[in-house]
Length: 175
Image (cartoon, rainbow, N blue to C red):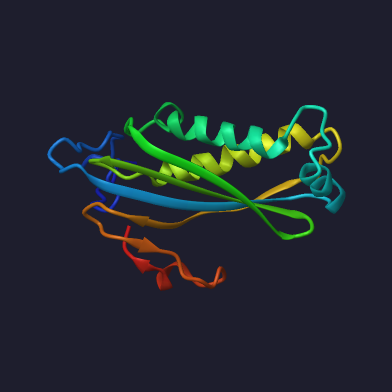
């Protein structure tokens, strides 16, 4: 059933899919930060931190995979624009003995944002960790992949509420 919806920009007035026209928009600096986690056994995390996997340094391979994926987001998500990234960074932290937290920051000077690139980077980094560690821990779980903030663009800045349990209505900015 085709319906009109002015808020969903990837659909035209008849409901057909489309790639949003960004040609008339000015190029502006844009940045996005996304985070996510992969939960595992404490033993698996200890092996990762001690670089005890025969496949290599799990976190460095995951970092490279996330960066490569961010650069290919337009190939993976059908209606994403090809964005020339000016930077992608991925960092890891360990908030609990069984959690690797992944943070990705993507940046560009373009006509469209880089939120999807940051989200894809986090997701692929987490999947790479899973792939490299599944021989010792098949119950790992990817969790909480989300956009934390973005800057630039006509819709303005966005910052997720500090409280992760807060409702989306309480987040700052508009998307």
